[in-house]
Image 1 (cartoon, one colour):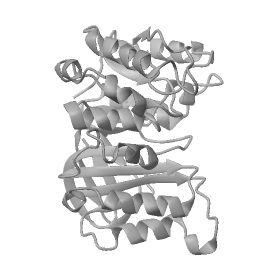
Image 2 (cartoon, one colour):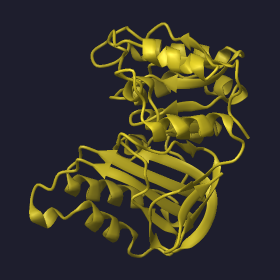
Image 3 (cartoon, helix red, strand yellow):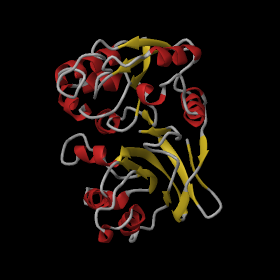
Length: 295
């Protein structure tokens, strides 16, 4: 079912980096054209080191947004770093009693997956207002996909290449690989059992991607995953030729698996991407004729 309808109120939050006085005018105009009324969190322009205020202040603004019944969804204004530092200060009982999707990308992955682990709160990954709405422009695919994810009842996206063929259903989790792994060994890492795992990243050395994937494989219930979708791994650097490519890393990671695996899905830290759900039941299809995600 649709997440929002025309006339709904949504919140802009900053769980990671601050707005840093970047202009939100175009973003606010865009949301107005979508028929949505934006409520701004009070900490958007605050600065504490590399974050939008102290951990407690950022968490408090998120708690207040969940408490406000009239606000139907929350949009992280930008990524960068720091959302994991809010997790010990969130009111999970209140969040569970007032679920609402968090829309984000990159560092938002930690917040989104922690809420899945603690409350089963759903999210969308693939959009940030300050990342996507700048210079009075927005990529056409991002805009189309966002509108569909917010307002349409059903969703079907074709993209990617089949690595291991098959069809599977399960709850999608994941997002940015390096950020997801910040949660390992904490109460905030989601259970991998019966999940569809979405992975992408940017600006990482390939040997580090390889080791991060190996760490992920060592997590409890990895062997009970239902399927994996790899998005784009952009600007990942090969330091020495023996480090291998991203393709080499993925090949090693999935070599003993029998579940469906899709690679090269149009999602990640790229200008043009699909918006995808987290904490929501999806079906993936991986075949030589078609790769898709539907929910």
